[in-house]
Length: 166
Image 1 (cartoon, rainbow, N blue to C red):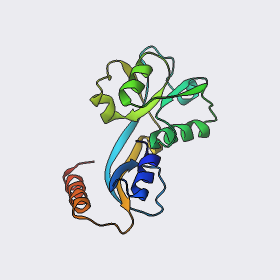
Image 2 (cartoon, helix red, strand yellow):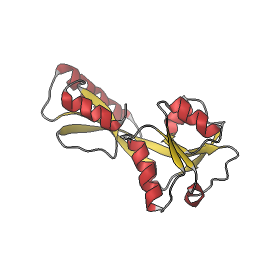
Image 3 (cartoon, one colour):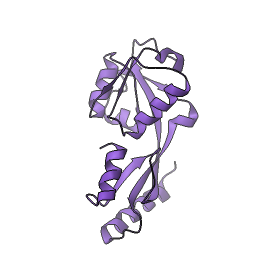
Image 4 (cartoon, one colour):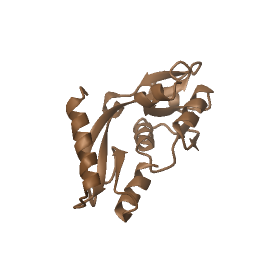
């Protein structure tokens, strides 16, 4: 789900915890940094897009509103005073990357996901400005909530962070 959807589910107690990326609203939540992801802009191999200014008039391919990565992309475009032609909302990284590879538009996604969906050879991955490229993903839960399951997840995240070289 999108970050906003996951946060709402945590607040309602429908799920105990979730992983969400910056930026997100922290009110009523406790969190623990889980990992850092490198975002990249993906475009078709034959795309003329090589810089931010080339994004004017492009279609943005993204998850539905509420997605943290979409917020990052839209904020960047707004800062650059670029208005996309339209936004194509899709529900999976596979669909997003396939549409980008087909030349339908541009998208951002974590480099690790780009590798996982195995489309690296089908798209050009362009760097984002450094202030946008690195995003932190957090484990979140309702403020004050405790359980043995949540504690186990927090311990696993801490163990993983301790062994990572990020």
